[in-house]
Length: 376
Picture 1: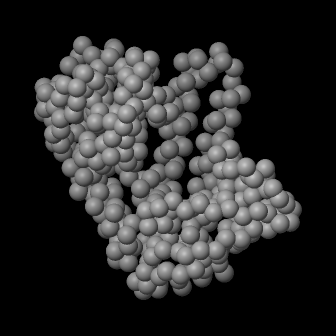
Picture 2: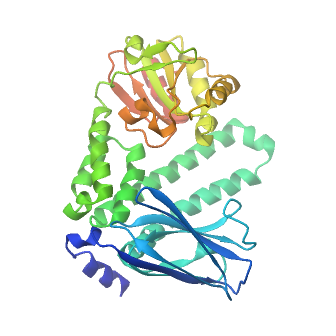
Picture 3: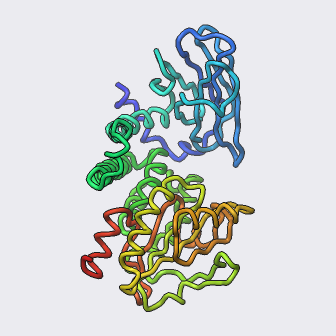
């Protein structure tokens, strides 16, 4: 029955993303009472909204005004009711006009969410992603179960990377299929954002073009459309956009100053855990091929007034190549120019300035460089 309802709702006109109104989020978590609390956090009109409700026999309820487009939010449960910072049990929902029901017999993370169109579609999306999430959990459990000696072995590390790559490929496939199957779903915009991280412009553009006119005309649709020219500018085969940025000593360094070499432009930050975890692979690649007309240019998205943290990370991780940053966090000029919305990300540029590789990590980076320079 739910599938039939979704089909009917999907045929509604442009009012789909223009409606505003009251929302209600209500549900239950066991039989908890005070001081146990549920917190609701979401974004509306560029502001973060936070509300809380004390549980009464497990019941909670929130009401408020929904905006003109669905807004991703989170319900967070704290048995002690002493704030959100220590919360580990949470559930993602979409704030939209109507009644949103949340029910669970144990953890909030395992709750079922029912409500208007976007929350129903999110349930379908999350069900499709479940094998992916289970894969990540199994990989994490495997790593925790291994001894310290096993974790350091080359065979274990290599297999872990292969397992992670397989899960990432599955996630990409899920996102792509959902977008194709739900061209009028706001969830598809979020799925497209995830898909775009590892995909090239030639794959992204057709998926965006296939979205409904209503979705493309929404606030989120217009925002993504504005990014597309930047993604096109850094597509495979394109000439990498020129930029100049200050290095660690304040000297301006231009991209064109590396012309004639194979160059990996590596976007990272000292605060980025996955970036720091990937740095040993990048160091290994640099040391192996630095005498083969290959070098690296690091572009950091470190925060304002965080130069010391940036310099400390460079030293600690042994990053011996040129590093630049305007220390503007996600407002980094170069990151914006290259359409970077998540890190780590990188772009491999040939001696003529053409982009010949993107998001090359671990074994993928090694394989590409071996292809260019021969195995060493």
